[in-house]
Length: 231
Image 1 (cartoon, rainbow, N blue to C red):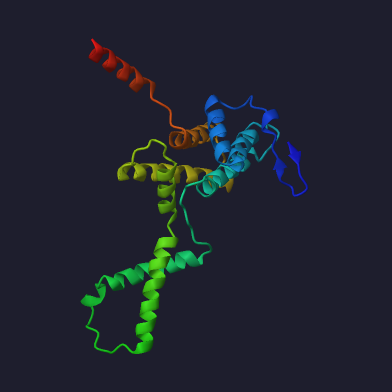
Image 2: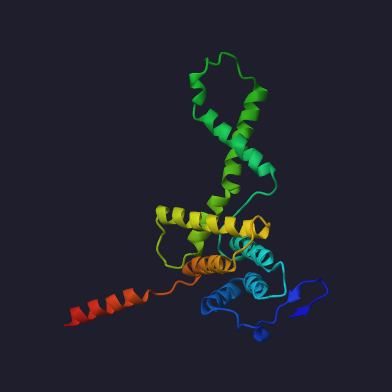
C-alpha cells in the first residue's frame, strides 16, 4: 500500500496479503472490486483491522468500515436506482407529508364542517403544496425503501423478487446494520467470534445478490430428473 499526497491509500491489490481471508471473502472481494474498488477496500480493510492484533480499536474500526460498505454500496454500484434527501429537513418534511396525505384523504370530515371560503392566495398555496409533496414522495425515500430497491436491483437471478422475500431481506439488512453501528460507536464490546460471524452473514447476503451460486443439491436433483426422463 502506498499513501498518496491527499491521504488516500493507493491500494495495490496484486501485492496484498490474502492469508487471513476466507474463500467466501475473496469471492465477494472480487465481485465488489468489479463494481467499485472503494467497496473492495472497505471489505478488505475490515478484515485487516480484525487481524491486526496490536490494534486496540480493531473491532470498532472494522465495524466502521463495514457500516461504510453498507451505506455506500447502493450509491456506488451501477444501475442501483437509489435517491435520498440530505439533512434533517428531510425527516421533518416527511412528517408534514404524512399530515398532508391525511388531509387529502378526507380525514377532516369527522371534524366540524369547514364553512369558510378559500381566497386566491390560499388556493395558490394549496396547489403548490400538492406539487411539492408529490415531488418529495418520489425523490426522498425512506432508508427501508432504498434498501428494498437496492436489493431488487442487485439481484441477478433474473426473476422478480416476491414482496415477502424483499421484506425479509430488508429486515436482515437492518439487523446487520444495527449490530455494526453499535460496535462502531462503542455501544458494546465486540465478541470476536460473533463479530466474524456477522461479517460472514453480510458477505453471504451480498454474494447471494451480486454473485449468486447454483445450489449443489438442486443441480444433483436436476441431473437425476434428466437421467430418469432419458430412460
